[in-house]
Amino acid sequence: MTRNVRLGVNIDHIATLRNARGGVDPHLLHMALAVEEAGADGITLHLREDRRHIRDDDVDLLRAHLRTPMNLEIAATDAMISIALRVRPHAVCLVPEHRLEITTEGGLDVLGHRDRIAQCVETLSAQGIRVSLFIDPNPAQIEGAAEVGAPVIELHTGDYANASDRLQRAAQLQTLQASAARAQRLGLEVHAGHGLTKFNVQPVAAIAGLRELNIGHSLIGRALLVGLPSAVGEFKQLILGA
Image (tube, rainbow, N blue to C red; front, side, top):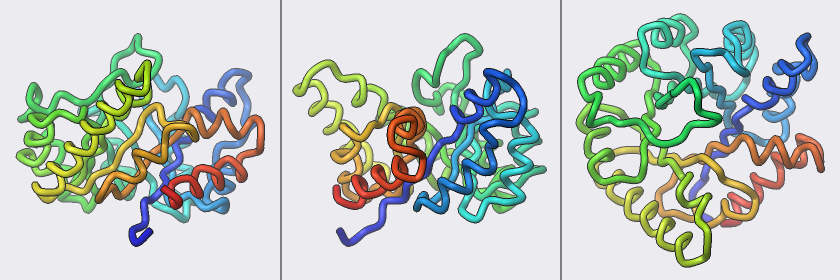
């Protein structure tokens, strides 16, 4: 493999486990540092408006101590943009957010909120924060991401991950491949994530020009069986061997 696809590990559900009983265990910073030591290229965390897992103090603590880039996922609200400007993570990924959803259900509607998203991209970029937009693999949304000035998109891989059979999965993979190629022609860096597991990650990791995968729930679940460092190592090897 002549290119390096980075592995970003989403640690939200370590915080979910901690919050189930309160207190500090498992300690989010200790777990994040273990993820880094195991070979992850970055740490992703989603500060939701309802603070269901990651909390504001988590963001501050991790920002002060992480040795790899922090990717902060947030909604495009004034309150969240203010937090990002104060914390100044390496990257911010703008995502859609609905209070009643269990997990993020789809990509950001760039076309429907063009002016707002363009404003967020400009504000964050002016402070040296790299902005990505979490979008569906849809040609119009990709064009919109380029038009609002985002340097990076993260393709939502949920439809691929949830495909019910081999033919449907192959069709979704082709959509992701075509979307990645279109984005690169527009000068966008391409990342991907959502619903990826050790059983479905390699075809996505092999997409031409893909630069980063962000994986959380499945990796943390795998860690319950094999340990966190081993789970990170397994996913890293699968990605590198794609």
